[in-house]
Length: 335
Image (cartoon, rainbow, N blue to C red; front, side):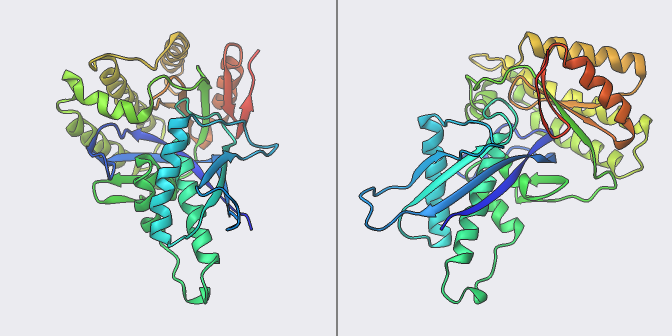
């Protein structure tokens, strides 16, 4: 019997980059994210027949028309299945399983596919636990906070994907944070859809070698307080510009750590620089625009208020001239 679940990606406005403890993925600073409910990983799993000669858990791509092709590297597959061992122990799952996964968006290119995939795997294993226990009416389901804490062991940022629309993660775990602004329009300018040469896990260690990491946790925590104080109020164009400025400075702060690590590395490419320059030009002309952020990758996330629909459409028309986009909840190929 196959059991299938899904989980969304999320985009951090205050970034998680740097760990206090690698085994638990405890972050060096608070992080704060918007949940991208249309960017999802789908996971399904089934128990292997006990008579099967294979004596190990298996991963394979989830092949479905609405999902994008995926092929995990050996290292990625190993990390995914190693985390599944933690879930098996937690949920008392015996025997061996076949696990299939895929996204409805590009993988391993800075769109937080690890967050959604580890969250989806955690949810799927939990669902298997609930449906395959004798006397299951007496089995208590784990809370979102408990599942989030488990998922964090596999991928730190995945813990925020259990909360929507806003997720807050601090040293004791993740939780929902309620704000009046709860529905944004999301777009991604896809500057590079290939697999990253430096994984996010490697970046977490690398940033600690930068001379500029000193003071980074304090800067991030201060930005978080400033950002949430603004978002708790009515967010009109004037406040929105302040949100843009905070988030712009925050993602640049993180990327400069990559640029100054030892050895240095970069995710930004010529396309990223071109798109960012154009976005700044639009902001200067319009005195309004999207909130801009980037994860550990080349691609650019844009968040628009609901009353910016015309602006949202204008950005789609402009950037489709030179880039592929993720917009209107789907992949759009540029000219």
